[in-house]
Image (cartoon, rainbow, N blue to C red; front, top):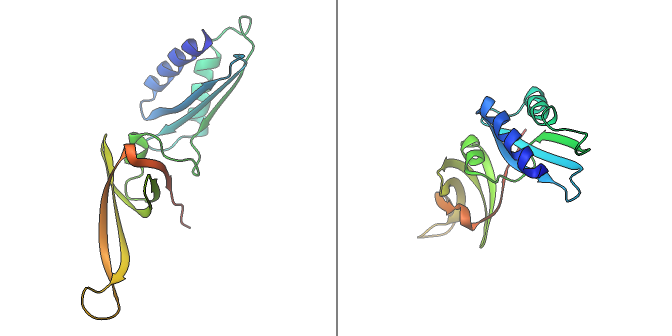
Length: 154
């Protein structure tokens, strides 16, 4: 099956450059289009995409199946999906939608089970009038994250 062959070739390509990792692999039902999205601990270059593409394309027989192949990097507007992507973005500002709320904060930690966010907010003073700045921290399990995106600031 084409999907199995592509997965094997993709695994080999990613083993050659272990800073790269797979985000998604899609082979359409008619086996004529393969779409691969990769990411890397230090980002993904055009040459990385070319190397992965060649590893797949040069080892599949077009006589057996005619296909188009697209290898791309995870875009900056793409949501984070894997713990490795969260670890890569430690120190950056992220927007996390959970099952119950949306939080924007600095990603300070990422384990295999959860992430830790830190942010500042203005809250009413416990005594008297006015507000004061409070530092908050939340540990959020991946299972509660509906969507997570890095906030790009210029």
